[in-house]
Image (cartoon, rainbow, N blue to C red):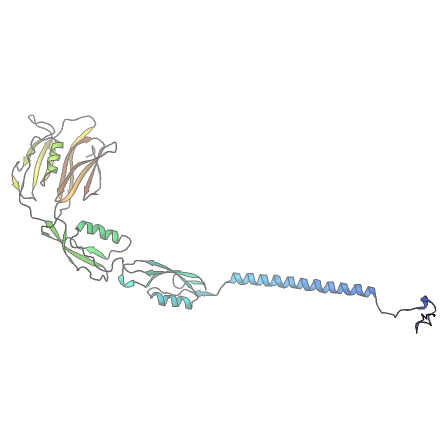
Length: 357
């Protein structure tokens, strides 16, 4: 059997070279030109995008420099805190709250200060400091009955150290003899619990202590300066000292006279005049009488005189209950020592240097 490998339609081509493909209109140069055009368009688009981003960035920068709109700070002083917050919100401002005590109890909860001040032009969104009153440190009168008047004075000074005092003591108080210790408050006006609406004057009735009987003058004749001070410190007698040079028959540095005489009975408000002769002079030592005029006290107060040596050592010289008036103390101390006076343990300046009187 003989196979026939002839295909219809191809038989007329006798040679391979006579086979021709269909003609396709393809120009490679035109393709290259088309790619260049695409690149150009893409480059232009990229450049335009970069320029657009740059413009957007610059615009955002200048917008940030311009910031928020400006507004005027309102005046909220004297307003309740709630009203002030609403005013701040209307102006798109944010408050920063601070609290403090004020002089007027009626200011409690109100704005007493602000920063920046009203009328200042600021940007919206700024924080404004508002100071809100906590009211007065004390809003009612305390009960001072039974307390010492000097301690009450110190208490009030401490209480109103940072603000105008709302409570002050009327001077002088009313003093009465009473079995309570001297200086004890017996009654007060306004009464405890009274609401404080402003500066208030406190009126006190104060004990003078029990009325004392007449006192006996101590025996001081012939005592040295140190022994005399020790004897006086143990009594309630007010002694006024003086010093003079000794006479021919007198011993130096001792008490040579006192009036009224020892053993006499005198009222507790009276004083005893005591004269001391000048001690024998010694190198580096100085003798004299320390003298200071004190206010008249309604009852005897603790008065003390101390000496600070040139080396810095502090020693008590005399401590007594003194009614006020002339306060005197004899001394024989190293030159350069310092005499320090205190009333109720509080120093009363100036200090006095021994040897300069």
